[in-house]
Image (cartoon, rainbow over all chains, first blue to last red; front, side, top):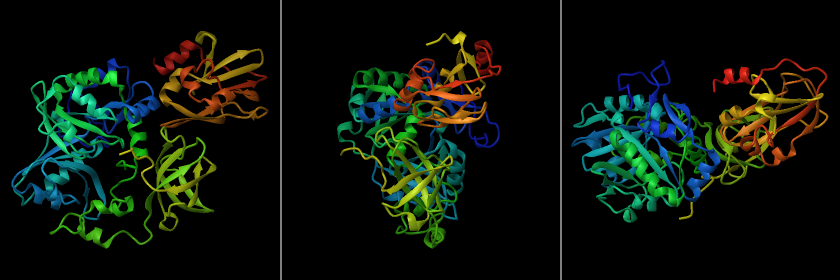
Length: 385
Length: 123
């Protein structure tokens, strides 16, 4: 398949860069997917129905192509210390094979990207960035490597990334012909851990991670082996209820799970504490890290904070809709939908701190009419342990 | 359900079935497909007077919101309660059970034929 665009290309959201296609694009076409442009990538938005795909992930499993995500390797004797400086978390403290959610901050304390980092070896980490922030993240990470004994390489073009998400995910992977040589058996692999494995002789990394609020796995494999892996997973999974799932349901799944989406809940002007991510910033770690001074000062006293909102009926507040408390404008929705699992509208929103307490009654301006909504705690949906 | 060739179309991806002086209005399969799973429809009430080209309702999917335009001026004589209760009908049967409103009109504007509409959507 086709891919033109290595790191010399400009960010996808500015100049008209060529559209990028996943190594699995022809499979999606055969499956009859509808496509959407996501951060310059032509990706499947749905195969059949957003709702059916959403419910399949909650009750059985869905298989997602998220090959647009960016994979940046950090190798070298200083890898842990370097990441402690470059990122907000204390990455040197994670165990071998552990994964950690973290933030890439700028000097002002704003968020350049949110990332998942896996420790593949003592001196080797894999940092996974959002597609839309690939170049910003790779650039910032490269700049911050100065003075450290590390090599930072953007290897995104080598990787396909397939996510299998849902309660029967483990059974599907265990039944997949060709998947073997697990460094850690899947029944012993804890959430937010990874294991090495092979698929018909090709190395892959399997993380027990995801963006749906369900148990699940993310499989990082070379682009050349991706189509065969997708096919094998599908063969194993179809009898267990696995369906191909697009970005539309991925968005409603992550929203129900209260997970932020960069560009909606997170931005260059968002402080982590505003997004409820204060715990992601390891202020107690030794030494400096980019953004520390600004984070220690904190945002302005009245800075808005992220909350969950729940409403009745079927009309959903959506991104950019305004919130009112009486006649006063007190906030704005960043993501919203009619929750497929819960059956009522849900939203995440930034609101003034004095109306952020759970139980506060607000109104959403839904295209001119006011809809009552209550502040609720996040997440909206939590799977049974 | 009428044959698609018997219907007239608008650039807003609505179809119109004319029977005497009543126009039955729905959205096309193309529009329903673009919206995704439809979860809410807000339709005008029986007796409402509507103006050609003006927004008279909303069609919401999990992902986005579409507007319903009145393709003709007139008075709403029927609104599809079945769709209000089961919005998914707009996806499953956009040209049949998923119809939206019936408008009594006195004058019919010129609309698109199936061929003209198909050329517009490029499908």
